[in-house]
Image 1 (cartoon, protein in one colour):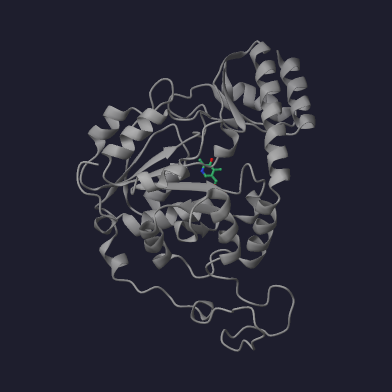
Image 2: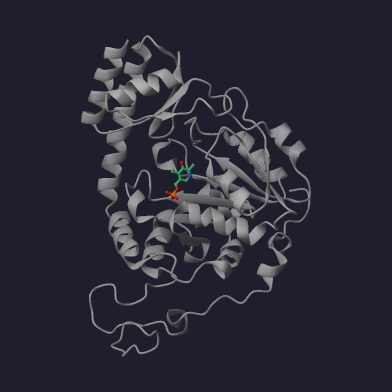
Amino acid sequence: MTKEFNIQNLIRENVKGLSPYSSARDEYVSDGSEMVFLDANENPYENGVNRYPDPQQRGLKAVLAEQKDISVENILLGNGSDEVLDLIFRTFCEPKVDNIISLPPTYGMYKVLSGINMVENREVLLTEDFQPDVEAILKAVDEHSKLLFLCSPNNPTGNIFSEESMMRLLNKFNGLVVIDEAYIDFAESESWVSRLSDFPNLVVTQTLSKAYGMAGIRLGICIASKEVIAALNKIKPPYNVNELTQQKALKRVLDVQSVKEEISNILNERERLLKVLREVSFVESIYTSDANFVLAKVDDATNRYNQLLAEGIVVRNRTTQPLCKNTLRFTVGTTEENKKLIEVLNKLT
Ligand SMILES: *Cc1c(COP(=O)(O)O)cnc(C)c1O
């Protein structure tokens, strides 16, 4: 970074001055001994969820910290990555003053959150091969640029961003570089979490919604320096990760073998799907995927989308996205689902 990096210069003034809500479960933390809890106005009759959940999700964080070789203080959990991303906006971006940089075509939530939070979204298109245009990004930056979103592997294009361009951006950008790793478990490259100590401005977000198969429980993960996490914790709603989610998530992340097997099956299915797509007459090109979906350019995306729908198959039409004219995004399903898709694709040709 050009200047000495100081996280305090990035945090909004009102957030710096805040004292967070102190919940009953923050004030008295159980050490496991038999205590009588009369502090939170809960209903005392046991049904599994009559007590408030742990506001700091200690059990789940301890396992994640060990698996990712980081400290518990480097982790914040949220109600999906969507909440985590919103907390990042609200902690660092002053409405109507600050701006963020996003790189379309990419995940739609960065733009939505910038709109909700009244923070200017400076869009810098990816290059033709869907890589960050480093020079153009650095030109778009000014002293109010607080966040730069790098979605890698990127949605909807599926590719991972080059290490070299990400390094350059981490070194040159004076705000926080948020690397959205929702699909990292499908990629061969290593997570940027291992580089946390090299870059004080690095924030990584992950999720249990994709490779871990738990989109329904809403569990998003933010990994960053202790200072960034402490700032986010100040504005986090006290009980943002509910008890059922904490229990389910803990069980799932401990079941390393099942997760691994499912990822491996999905990757095999992805290769099978790629082979078939190459033979489909109306498919014009297929983009490399480091994720659990494949983006393909077809002759007429809206027409093909409707034809697939009529056959009972729902894909995502991405034709309105920049650089994505006439593209469809196919999520990799089970062997059975993919068989049905392949049959239908061949019928349409
Ligand atoms: C699916 C997805 C997420 C996941 O969001 P959750 O709120 O955790 O379900 C995050 N980022 C990207 C790029 C995604 O595609």
